[in-house]
Amino acid sequence: MASTPDGIGFTITHSIQHTGQRMKYLLRPDGRRIHIAATPEEHARLHKTLAAVEPEGKFDIYLHDSPEHVDAVREMHAHHEQRKGELREKHADVYDEFEHVHAQLGALQDELHLLTEHGVSLDANFSKFGYDAHLSR
Figure (cartoon, one colour):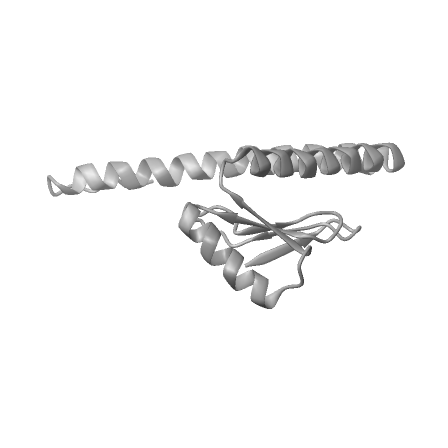
């Protein structure tokens, strides 16, 4: 689990380990946690558990893909867009260089993903016939 602070008390906590899971909770700029429930049953279970542990008003629980969940994510997105604009204005030279490096890393990550995914699917098909999908140099 990784936490990423943005310097003003806003944290997104990920419980994702590249298994396709979604975030379990978000932390709003005002400090309130937003817990995301996949089902109404999980929502009820979370509410019961959290009400016993956390002070009232310090958390919200939303069903995944509900209007409240979407609004909360939009609110946090707007917050980060605003922070991005402030950083661009304050540190324009470094910001542009960082954006370029970030874009290059994204492109390389996409390429690595394609290479590994493609190799895995080829390997699965080739191995049926006793072959190997890995290319030799």
